[in-house]
Length: 202
Image: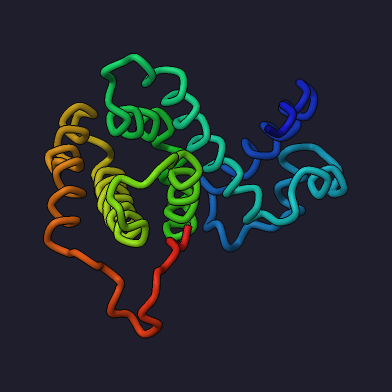
């Protein structure tokens, strides 16, 4: 586990993040220069590069923090609880809606999806079916469906209540989906070009 940044580091990063989002409200993301970020944050350019390699690294670090916070909440709450992970995801997303809108408007949709996939993969402890490749394909499909809902919801200013969004996604009956596809797709991947066991690409 990475050591938690000290208070001064967290404060500096927050200043840099706030400077970026302040500028993003005034101009397109691709027009923003690092010199403008450092000017608004009132820091030296070397300070920026101490914390971030590029402005893309800065932008995605904010998304990482939001996604990481979501998974930490799951780890703290879900054990011994009947709270829905899907509801938590929509709830955290809505809490950070303005920031997520700016990140998505900057053309980072696929990068955010990759982040969600990566964090989900890190939390996956075991396969559900006996075919790890099928498991990974199903999870990829579910992650894609969930992210598509998040994108549409964001476009609509999150006007649909969180509970209804969570209910919409869980209507897929995820546990049944794994069972059903394992039954209907026996030997999934066995007829691939290499005709051998595949490992999931996480």
